[in-house]
Length: 353
Image (tube, rainbow, N blue to C red; front, side):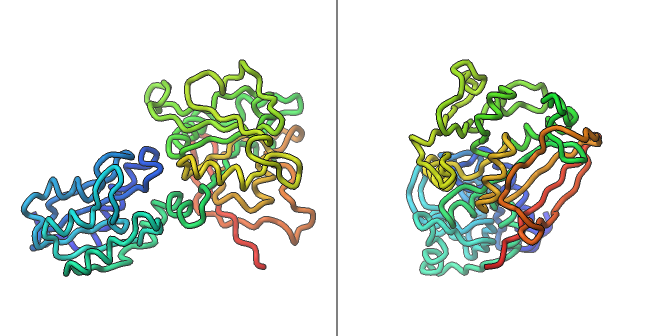
């Protein structure tokens, strides 16, 4: 097998890391490629699920003795603590790895320190190779660990004129089946799906994730969270059907915000404590507006159907904007056609001051 460059190996490690999206939380996604002393790939691995072997351990097992004198290329700084598994930094030292190339340092104070341990053992450590790409692939976990609350994605579906339902309230279905299946894939990458009680009362959604092959329930289901200030969620609502864990988050339990409703920063802090690193905000134009007004949305994924209604509820209500100067500016990062619909992905720009 021909030798590969460290840059090529890191690109492969980032691809491997992506295979763990949706199954590793509260741990990060991590990929690792091991090169022997001649630069040939002798091991690959990724972190598949929380509690399972880390990417470095999987790659070391494949490499065996050929890891000695080689290079470990890993998307995140090897952990330096003993949790459900042992420290990867020690495993790399014991295997005789001569060099470790890291894309992104670990911001978790509990697990960080692997680079220092490796250097103290005489291992060469290089940092920052394809760092931006690795950061993007692990953005939810990294963001949540740095600030203490989950990465929030607001998902909405609307017509070209921004309507989420017709004037009579009917909304099934605004977008195509292809777009709806894409949403199920998106749900499969997050730890919690959040909706307001108004959406539950109006649409009675299940908020579950389904397999793309046959439409059956996915094995791993995100936590369903209903933001319900006064506890109005019916006992027979589909979110209570037992298909997935559900939390009815009331103001009495979470705390009350300035608007007299559930305190949203407190809600996110509690979700972080529960191991939630990525949240999909799905239901309720008013709830979405409250999250946006508070600056709590990190990414927006909109499914826009090639339809016009001219009247009916809008996808967003009261985001704290009263004049054009207060508009929430967005940066479009992707526009993809999904069936007949468009999926628009955008990032809110940070406001100055």
